[in-house]
Length: 238
Ligand SMILES: C[S@@+](CC[C@H](N)C(=O)[O-])C[C@H]1O[C@@H](n2cnc3c(N)ncnc32)[C@H](O)[C@@H]1O
Image (cartoon, rainbow, N blue to C red):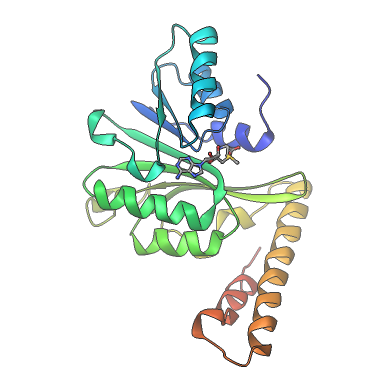
């Protein structure tokens, strides 16, 4: 089955061995199907809140992947039953807003504080607030990638809930999460340099528009002031 470049990139970033991979907000299950082929030693969990979607995904799994290890769950991502499954977990959340993603991560983190979970995240918008939340929760960064698809830009972050405080010897492998990103601004080809430039311009313009709106409003609240975000993006060195 053909999957988009964005989903291919997400799939490529699954490099460690996991006992359980959760394809959350799986929609038609395309990413999970690809993972069943590439990650044969993992159990792939398909999660979506829409019952009809899950019934359809289950039918396809029974037909095309009868010998693979999978399970479907029709539920809210905030309520993943992680403790029912022993071993190392990777939770993939892609294709939903960063604000909703924050709610999922907060809920999962709250319920499973002692589990060392990796998250592979590809939000639609609100990347800055998502990064702020991950920093606040003391998550660490394993990898981050920027891609462009159909004139939209996507940051993909592989992070771990295992805080450095828990195990300081992991410092070298686990980096701090930057509020605006770090590796995503480094390009190794002229094509990627173009993507990086366009994304930076677009992001700064977006926050400038918000800032202008907030300056024009008579009642200025602290939340509307995004000058610090503009400054942070402007300070990016490439
Ligand atoms: C646009 S699709 C994303 C599909 C795929 N992950 C991707 O990145 O292309 C968003 C999916 O999120 C699901 N969804 C929204 N809120 C959810 C929730 N609270 N729990 C589980 N799934 C949810 C929707 O039903 C929908 O299928």
